[in-house]
Image (cartoon, rainbow, N blue to C red; front, side, top):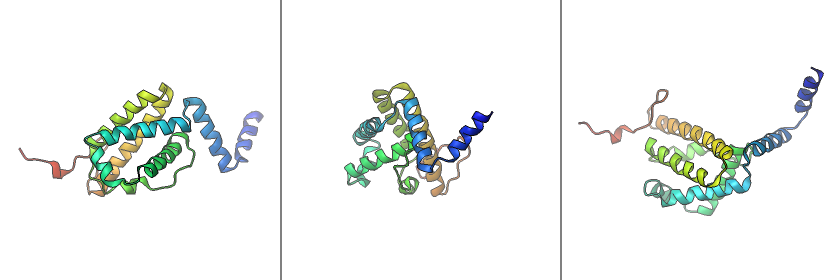
Length: 166
């Protein structure tokens, strides 16, 4: 029991930065994810996105500095996948005005899964995909709400503007 208490006290004395570094190291050890893998996933994924007839035009119409965007996305995924704290931004707000719905998120996830299968070992792919699924779901709900649609649990966003009466 005293060992357990000592361990708790030791963790309490760590700085926020030290706790973050320990958490990042633990994730890296468990998944094999490192900064090079994040770089490869981000660059591989966005190469697929840019070549995709459905998603490519949406990204190309908005992103003028692809090098800057890819660097930003590497920082984002470092923060998401490794809890590194490398990214500071508000990604939800950037996605709010985009003309996207469930079909775009499904394609995004499909391309991301393909990229992970090509680059990552299974533990890393699972870790990335769990995060990607949560992000996609959160963004889909947020974008729907931004457009005045409140989704029920499990409901997907299909804008009424696309609805065609029979």
